[in-house]
Image (cartoon, rainbow, N blue to C red; front, side, top):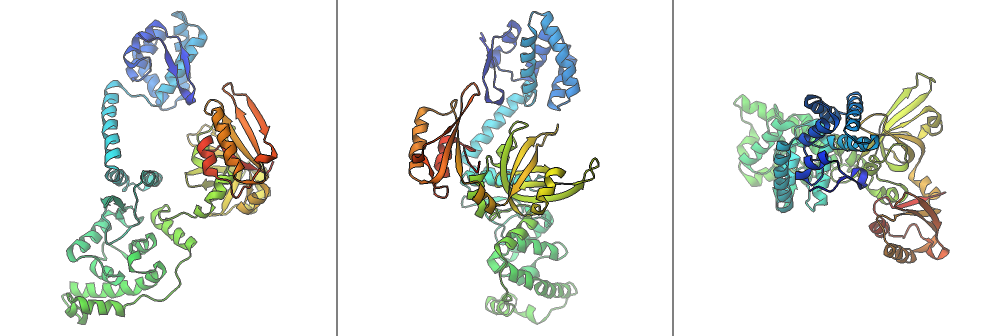
Length: 514
């Protein structure tokens, strides 16, 4: 017999004595709402809602149709009270139903998904590289799913599987596996396309690996692999085995033109002097040497990454934020992806690279404001700075600028949250202004007294001038703000953030100037 059912929304557990009808309906799932059919029966038998309306209610919840939800809420509460429940009990039960509606399925689908979930978990654990390569390939043809592709690449690397850069001499159209590593699928290169990727693989399989960019241009069909696609291959790093990317880009027009002329001659049935030496590797090597790459400076790191993102829509080999990673961890309150999941109205400090800067004029005040995205190594977030604040920080807005921002989270009745920016400052300014104190956040529901001793040992290993404060939150939500003694002051440049976050969790350490 089910004794109780539990509300686990937002990680909080709240046990509620069940109504006999609920106990009966939820018996097979141990008091937890799992199947859509269970919800429909609760709405029907406890709230007096007919089954067709109960089904419509579930669909409205999944699609967030608030007007329908509110209408059924009132009907359910009214019917539940007629059946002996209090208004509060009816509200709590309907709240569980709404929460359930965000992820529930009917019973037959649930069983199928459970089996698929078990199978995919097994494959992911025991055939990690193959599983992740298949997952990447499933998104490769949809240009609108680049963010998902990036998430899968990050997941693969977090699971210990390398995702190699594109390479025309090893890559296939889809992501594949070799020696436990994932070979980049050529179709994922922007502007290349599956047809061009298949043509590259065909040419390689017929006559062996490409010797250089001149050999590549000569062997692929230019009607399928056009010059613009070859430029994207260079920018993506797919020709790195042949030389510096800047030199390859300079050599491409000459290589493409020469190959184009030879291909046209062959289509007309003509042969030239060089065709006589095909198949002779020594002479071929000599001809390749004659087509040596020009001696030009290599692209800077920032240029290389900019072109890489242009070709892939994301950074693969590195990230412009990599050199600022320590400062971003030190001065932000939350990584972007975690901050996006917080409640509306919370104030945060996020940081990263500014992208997609767009300027607007307010119809109300006729003043300018700005929208942009701030991207860190965990994700990106939509941001807005309204006219009053924008006047102070207008010069700080520019694409690809590394910035920190104090902001308030606002969902604005949208699925994607928006961060309302109040203040911006560059990394150098943050280093000067935000290193006078280090704030450690502890939650008594998650941390024990031994964790305090562990923190003390970590702090004592890096003495310095920066004071340390402790913010303690108890199970009832009450806060205590404590300032630690001078013996626990630290050097902000030497203190181990990894060790502190191992104890406190992500976002548990914040540097501040206040």
